[in-house]
Image (tube, rainbow, N blue to C red):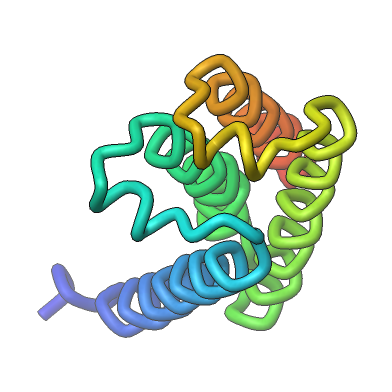
Length: 132
């Protein structure tokens, strides 16, 4: 069927994309000193905002890489670069907001919004730079 010729490529790219999202979440949740999921389950909006911004900030360049990659290896390399860029965004957040993890634990939405904005901003710049 000519309508499904792209299905294997779609499946491969989608699987690699989901794998990178799972890897990003696992690394982010493991490396941050505060426990986002426990905080979110307890109703901490700041933790949810910060984690959502970080995830969106990662998915933006990942989706750009998926759309512009010429092969799965190409996607994997750009996905790894997106991971590094988001780690830098987290480092910038920690630099700008001393005591950031404790502020999230206390539910400080102002810290969470700045963190989410930094992550999304870095993700947008990263995604735009991946158009080659």
